[in-house]
Image (tube, rainbow, N blue to C red):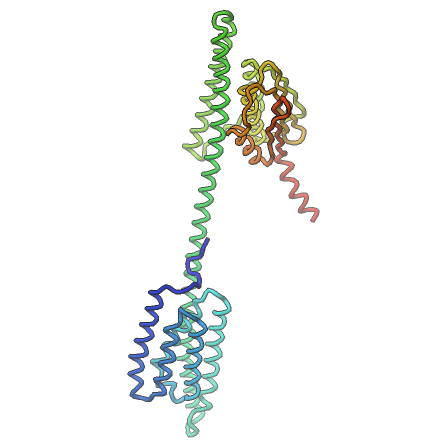
Length: 394
């Protein structure tokens, strides 16, 4: 996220404000000190230029500020006389304290400390010889205290402003991160709902269409087959309505418990697909793990693969289904191609995305006269244990 207060080029309004302010300082304070002496006017002009360029160039501002300080160090008798003009140093150190770069802030702090330390030593040394030591020390402490108030006060004011801006920037970044996280969660939910809707609707309507065609052909000659087909249509419709209600409940309430098809529904799925006329040869190895993610992923992948076989396969030939639960989940569905598709529909893409979400992968491609779908989903418990083992070995 781009930071709001970067140290970029100042705006035109800011430059105009600084130039007008510096010019007004030069005119008003310069006229005031012109009655005292032109040397003091030179100091005022140097400080005015530093004010004009304080946002354009920090090095130039520092250079003119140091030049004004050097003139004042050369003439210690001007210290108290230039007290009004010295207020401009507060604006100079304010810029240094508010700078986003730490080296610039440290430079301002060190410069203020060195300047005040030099004043504490320099003023008593260059005081008039007739004055007592106590008066010299008092003059040095008084002038140093005023300089410290101006320099350190300006620096602290700028630093506090920087802290407020950084706190506001941090809060803004937290709000933006929270917004992006919510947007990401919303997009994930939309993608999941779209995939579930596609799987449910595509599967149910494929079954209904196949059973309706079979019932129409056997209506007169085989009433029993027609009755069986209507029962399958009714059972499929009830199951679909229940799944759609679950999805709508999740959309209305984010805290609603998600319904996950269990492993026992695999048998119902295979039975329903067999009633459509498919000859399914099912081969299972191993015991399913206790993982809702694998259960849901396995059910959706198997449902979509069988639906595609029903829509595009040759139902006169058997459909071979192999499910291996020994280490995660491995699925292989092979059917003879009847009405070929391009293999790039929403169903194939949805299966690939669903397998990727579960940490696995899926391939769906033609192999001679057959269409083969293979999917590999790792065991979540094993995947979680691997990082711990790796960290233990390191």
